[in-house]
Length: 100
Figure 1 (spheres, one colour):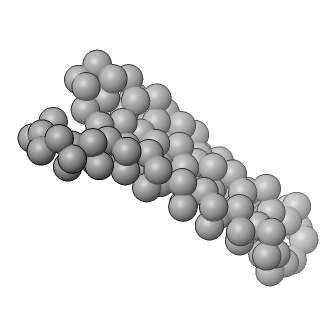
Figure 2 (cartoon, one colour):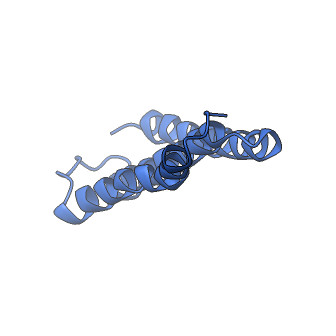
Figure 3 (cartoon, rainbow, N blue to C red):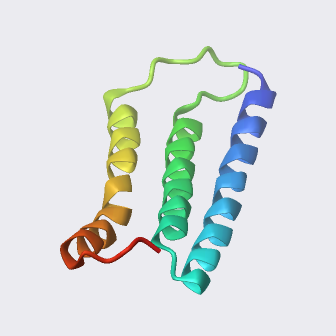
């Protein structure tokens, strides 16, 4: 594995963190659950990318197959996503509110 892949992945993770911060701030300012959900999605993607970076082998070492633990951590991070918008979606549905 070359050093470029880790650098690219690190840049992608940093991008997701910045995207998270901007989307959450904009969502709170606008009262938009959609923007807040987008920000939460960005954070979850950053966490999944962090797991991939964490399980990546050191430079010059052949890549190993991801372990079940790493796969489980990534899966759990993506299963968190519905929890970020489902409560507000259910409230909107039950109250018959129009979307914001």
